[in-house]
Length: 161
Length: 377
Image (cartoon, rainbow over all chains, first blue to last red; front, side):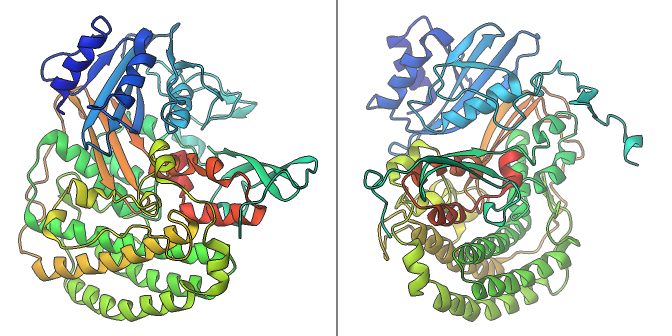
């Protein structure tokens, strides 16, 4: 199925929470209905997206909205889908790690790097950075700290040249 | 060897720390293992010791400057990373490449696949106690590294494939040396096969151990030889041919469970070895068809992709590499995310090693063929 048809199919079911612009490569879903939509795209006979390839987080650039892009593939029907969810700093997204196992670590990475919160995640903590790290480095307004646990963080090249 | 029944003896639970400095973790990976006697009940992989925040660096570099950073992600298959990234950028720029460039890329990518799989198979043997095959594998890999040194001056981190082309044309005699290498290598591979593949001790340690069923594999986003060993024919070179892979005739080996169950450690080893055969096949065809031409023809003067995003996929030695790039029309990426195949392959690790003995955990980890540079990025 091509993305227009998938968007139409989802719009029939969840009219309010699906947003699809003409010629876009992705479908926008609101965070409230995400868990139901996720179950639909996994189990619906015409969709069957069983392979979650990647979850990428991104900064929307206004210092309060952050987004996640989910890239799906269906191994049986051989088609693709990209879904995007954008939330503000206070809100959280429902975790889909019980639906796709690969979401578990990818969601932790999205939290670690971009500070996006996921509800109902079985083991929600940082994955690549140390547990006591402050801030989320991939945010555009992130400042590199001068010290980490008393160790200076070199900022200019003179430090090692 | 069979999965241990936990109900027979119940001992006190012990937490065992393995790594980060441990030869069997294939890099700086730390495993927090909960054991009951010698039986593993839960594994918690802790990573990030090699974290350089590659993605943040990319947001401050122009598109061309990112290429050497991709080398350092998967340092055993740097060519694949270069190629995967270049394909993603070319997709955004809509560049048509000269035929010769595509052929050169396929040739180096397949040589790299052989080199990477040789390390994987050799080290896997080493993990379960076979030392000789490891030295043989590295000896043959050295020849490929020599070829790459001749090609671009570097042995491990090449910075060879650039968006829109390659850094240098093939040096004179490169094709001749590659053909000589293939003639030398094919009997050597047979020898490697003879000493390890059906070796009774090796089979006893690896067959029926750490089975990834197709359902679990797909659910956890496993890819590459690790997924193909579970009996799923999932190879991007065949399924959705990028570059010019549709011009070559090759098979996709999948796990058949010849020594035990489909998707066990032995199958993962065997699939990698058979993939080396297929790579040799592709190389011979590519060398025979290699056209002439200028390799710098399509190199853009300025890499400045239009606004938009791209998700491009590439079949590397470890699996499905994805580059998700968001461009805002500038000469630096707004956001660049790399989907690391080894990251997803490792996430299935604790799922499949529950109930196995400590020594099997080493076998299972070795069979996944992880590269920590790519997991931590």
